[in-house]
Each structure stands twice: as structure tokens, then as C-alpha cells.
Image (cartoon, rainbow, N blue to C red; front, side):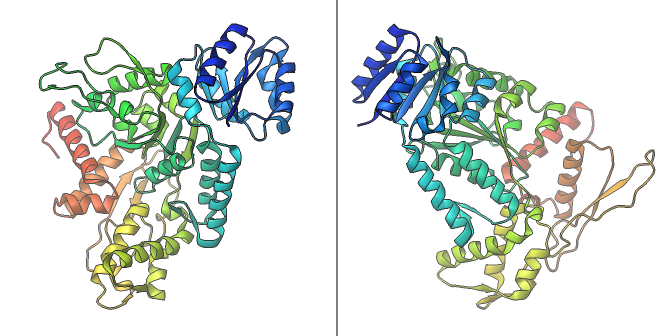
Length: 478
């Protein structure tokens, strides 16, 4: 039977909390001082420790000074107020989560439902680590490069905790796969994982989709609607492209992160939420703040545990492993096995992959279809240098052009080059590249999105924004 230890100097509060826990079928012990806590830990190792930080004879943190005391126990910090510092403290000390006083029955139920013996999680992580050495995969993630090994280490450290994670990386690097891996290694794995692309929802509907709405709250609201926070209850909510969320909605999201409560559109009463947030963006967070796309306070609230995914061009040693993996999966789906020639693998490892892993997967799919026999040669694969060309130094007062590699670059296609002056903002550079790529492919949006390594919906959103900006400036649309 699961055993819980409550360490709290408030005798009445700990007694009432103990009764609630006992009603759930757990055994309970209480301690009102550090001395009593050490005695209880020595008497029976608990599966879960609810630890208050302020105790008469010291701080709850003192228990972490002796790692043997808490080796086989989960620790959930109990704090009087939620803050970014508390989240970081919980992670640094080895706690799996924290809850805010006064503890509500829903909060308590959520914590109790996620109790998992640390030995179980450690065994799973050990199995995944061994898999990296033998087959090159860490769950759904593939790669053995040093940069990916660092990502795996970060995932193993943060997955078992309840802190917010902020994933950054270029489009196509696998941010959602990382979020799913964190969820599958977490104590919330039995509950839903819900991924939401903030750039794929109409600005007029996004608040209703995230928080839900009441019947009659606006025209067309003929029934009550549960939002993402309710549908992901107890699990993980992945907010992709968070910089595409309207700023007024970012304020409300920040409020939810700070209080743990939200309101449906048209509601008069707020409700609790028990959801872990993982956010992601393909932009540089500080640049997004400078460009007015992301609130600084929200960025700092999300950025409790940052994970930066490397672009594929910075881990070219993983390309062959990934390509072989994709080819094997495609062969299983299509019922015909094909192989890469040595020249094809060399071509793959020499390409710069602006669309990252997503572009590689699409290139393998295309090559599989085009290759007539059982061997895929270099003819059907993209070509190009492995890195951006280096420009010679120029005087500081002169504009220095930055050359972007050819767009597309597949066999039989004419390459195009875009020249950008130094000093241009990232937003302007992105717009220039998108419009130039669109023009290069004869305004075929599907091919443009594939070449850029972004979703078709994201491309439409960008073009819509450019048209709105031009209209506001009195210019013709792009």
C-alpha cells in the first residue's frame, strides 16, 4: 500500500490532510518538525512526502542534505505562494512538483494519482539510455550526436518533475516529439497529451478553443464547449508556436500559469486546472520579445526549464541514422524494402537541410517514390553545401551582404539565391525569404511550405500578416 508522509508545522492542517489522504486508501504519517520527519523516514520509507519548507527547527530543504533519507521517495514541496523561484527550487532540490496552500481536494487528488516509485522511472530512463548506445534512439527521438545526447539528458532530468518546459528550435527539428517524450516519461503519462498549434487557430477563436466557452457567450455558441485546459486535465498541454498567440491572450495564459485557475469565455466563476504546460517556438525568444510577438513576463514564466533543439545541419552525423529509419518505416508501410546507395548517403550527409528533420523525412519519401528499383541513388536527393558560405570581413560602416543557400536545390531545378544586408531584423529577413521562395516556386504554396520546412497553415498565416501590414502602410499586398 502506498505510504504518505506529511511534514507540516500546522498540526490541524496536517491532521485534516492526513484524513483526506487516508480516505483515498493510502497509509499516512505526520511530522511537525524536522526531527520528527527524520524519525518517520527512518521508521518507514514513504512513497510520497508532502514537505512544507517552513518548520520550527529549520527548513524543509534540510532533509535534502542527507540523500539517503529520500532515495525511494517522491517529494512534493508545499508552499504558501507560487513563483518562478519556487519552481526552480523544486527542480534543483530534486522535488517532483509543488502545490500551493491552501491545498484543495482537486490538487491533492492530482498529486496522489501521479505517485510513481522513483525506481520505476530510473529503470525506464536506463532502458532508453541503453537504447541510444545500441540502436541510436531515445524513445521517438533518434541521434547519437553530442548535442542530442545533451537533449536526452535534459529530458530525463525534467520529465519526472512538474515544472514548465520551454522548447526552442528551428521549424522541423522535432519540438513536438520532445514534448511527447517528456510526457511519456512523466508521472502524467496515463492522462492526455494534447498538442495545440497556436498559429493554426483563428485569432477570433483561439481563446474559446484554449479556455472553452459557455452556452450563449457569443453568437453561434449554442452549447457549452470544453477548451484545451479541460480536455488535457491531469495531463500535458503542448502549446506550439506560442509566439503566434495574440498578446491579449498571452496575458490570460500568464494568469493561469501563476494562479492555476482559468475561466471559460462567458463564465462568471473560475475553475482549477491540473495541467502541465510545455511551450515551444521556432523563434529566438528574446528576439520575439523585442519584436512584440511574445510578452516578456510570459517568456520568463515559461522559460523555467529551457531545451534548445539543434538544427540538423549541426548534427550531420545523425543524418544517415535518421534517413535509414525513415526509409525502413516507409518500406514497412508500402510493402517494399529499398536501400540507399553509398553515394546517396554521402549526398544526404553533405546537404545543409534548412527544413531540418521534417525536410529529411520528406526527401526520403520522395526518393523512395522516384527510385524505380530497390536502390535509391543520389539522383533523387537534394544537393547543396553543408553550411552557409562565409563572407569576407567588411568595414563596420558598410552594409555586409549575407548569402542564403539555394532554395530547393533538387535535381533538375534551378537554384535561387537571396541576398540579405546585415542589420536587417529577423522578421524582415523571414518575410524576404518566404516571399522570394514563394516567387521561386511560381506561387505554389505547398511546394513553398515544403521547401521552407514549415506547415502550410503557418505559410498562410505569414502571408495574411504581410498583406495586413502592407494594407496598413498603404502598400500593395505581397
